[in-house]
Length: 503
Ligand code: BES
Ligand code: MG
Ligand code: ZN
Image 1: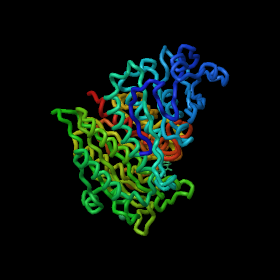
Image 2: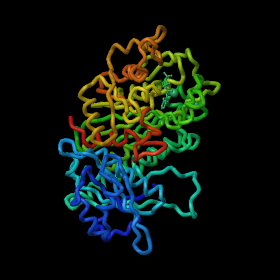
Image 3: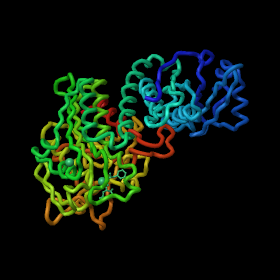
Image 4: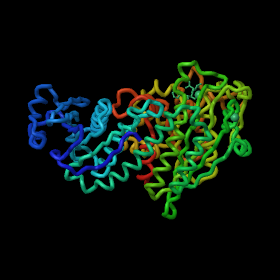
């Protein structure tokens, strides 16, 4: 997209990049930089001592070296302290992020990352390379479609990964995995960053169709007429105020293995959330093109799955519509009937995510024999208050599945935090004139949890996890490898879950 990532087998002395990044743990020794001193012919140790670079977590220093004609920027990034004899892998991801962002900010065209050995972290070789590949690509992403092109040429940052000798054997496999995952994450971000009038439900469904064809996924698209015929009153009810046709997209990946488990991924795809008649204040509407993030994650994780071909079936279902206050819009007080026959009183049209997910979840559990269903949605503003921007909120009443998702989250770096979830919260969504209502109650609060209670009405007995990515999908601050705009949260997690699924 805005960068290319490749593996390099060069020695430091052979590297011709405009920048070379080197990663050092806290209290590194002269021995750690010895090879570098020798190979690049600079007294790096003295320089690092002079600028008091200690290898602390999050630190970065740059030494420009003139080789006669050009400067090479030697970038040093800190890896922090060891804990239980291992370095923290997230610190490594962020160090890579800082190095790549440095190269980007200086408009350099090339950077080589001299990666430390995977054994310093609690990660196997292949996984390490895969993740370094992904994080370098994520850091190199920039949404610049509408910015002027300098000198009329596309400037792409070329990132080379130089592996430690012991990791080189796993290089090819790690790179292959990494490139598939990276592409899915960045495509997700690109869709989210795209202005809302340029990515309508129809556009998004078309993208899904095209990718499905390219990668051998089965793709089914229902238009609004069919959505109404099927009785998806939630999705149709949200779509009523928009001039854009709603779509319901199903992508299916079938494993070669007979009797494979089947995972269901469900995504919220509101391509723009104005709030509907319960109109959002202007400031809250500014980023609401992000409200299709869940759907984008689901579609793109299926694209990755289709390429990685794990022994598990995966079905992706996404409900796509705008939420607009047009003259036929659903009104506060209206009651909608969903695919499974349940009814809900709509008291706030801005709580539309649960209305479209209700139909998608009900459709998923009725029409597929699922071993689990996971929905991903930018569902509640309350989520950011509950868990902050570095965690996706996880809600579930199934400990076993929640545990699996938590493992995938910590392995992939796509972090989740589980919130409480039990029947006590159900009272919040009780309605006097329908099965449920689409907002919670002040006495119970906990908007993220009560939204999940609403969804639970549509998952029957299928083990279910809800991921609220309203906290993580957009404008995550201070994490070096992200930047302003979309993060692609939950894509790495969903792919990890599919490729590592065990009964
Ligand atoms: N799309 C929003 C949630 C959101 C907020 C996502 C901020 C990302 C960032 C969702 O549709 C919404 O508006 N939810 C309401 C629910 C409320 C009316 C019960 C909210 O959170 O305010
Ligand atoms: Mg419409
Ligand atoms: Zn809303």
